[in-house]
View 1 (cartoon, helix red, strand yellow):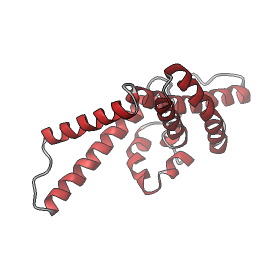
View 2 (cartoon, helix red, strand yellow):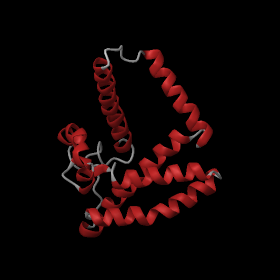
View 3 (tube, helix red, strand yellow):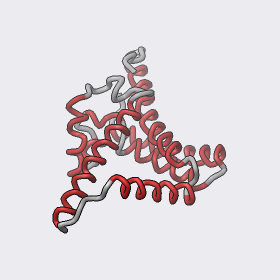
View 4 (tube, one colour):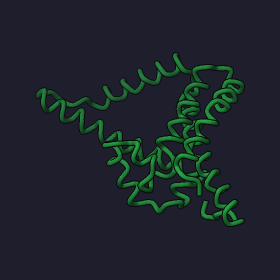
Amino acid sequence: MPNGKTHDAITCLLAAPTFVMTWRVTDNIPLAALTTAAFLFGGLMFGPDLDTQSIQYTRWGIFRLLWFPYKAFFAHRSRWSHGLVFGTLLRVIYFAGVMTLFFALIFYFAAMLRHAAPPNLLQIRETWENLGMWTRQNIGDFALLVAFIGLWWGAASHTLTDIAGTFIKTGRVFTKW
């Protein structure tokens, strides 16, 4: 199995082709840039090895605490962490849930300190709508889709490298994925 430096090198080498291919498919430079940024983030920070004491895990610094429940719950190289289908989707859902709780607590405590009411659901919805409108106007209608594709491709390149490394060393494919 390749080490973290090998995975990082492969991620960096695939960044330019990822940008070019996305640009050719979408004919949209902001979408290509978003896909490439998500790919780099997916490969360097958001990949399958967040379930171990890995380079990806330690890069989060103090924020790696957000990944501790994920690390404790999922077995390394399982279909849930390294899986080509479910791995990235599960991390996105997990991260979105953790960040939602984190920001909800921040807004709640900030409102308490100001002796004000926390934002209500209508205000939260309006904020998300404004963010969505800004994203569509400045990046494109498919921003969330290409961001997910970039995250997926970053994690998939890691998993595919692991599969190739296992095959080269043992002559067989690790079949849990």
